[in-house]
Length: 112
Image 1: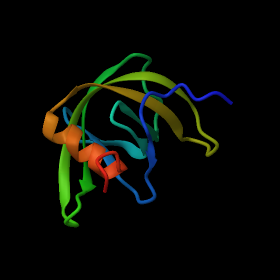
Image 2: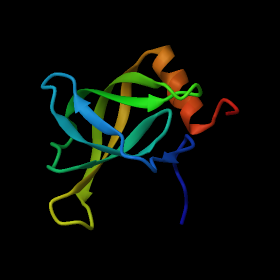
Image 3: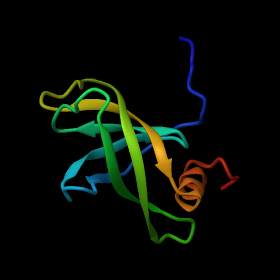
Image 4: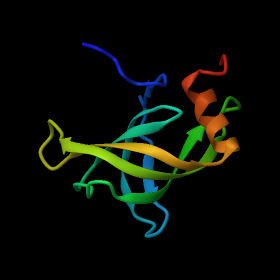
């Protein structure tokens, strides 16, 4: 299988809930995360191409939670292997330098 991703991805081995910042509702949880985007496991299908402002927390190197806010666009979605769950791929379209550095550190791209 050919790998076309531009950035290293890291699977989330702990539950990282992702909230819709506009509604305050949890949309799903992170499946994997990169500097460019994320795979999210959702309980409801996501509209093709939809734009969202999302928030989640990552544990930083000091073991403290760090809030991350990202603007995303849905790129693809499909039904997951578990009935009632969906995989959705999101591309980051708006992210602060601080939040990008936190994500890169979490996935190990900065030498953690």
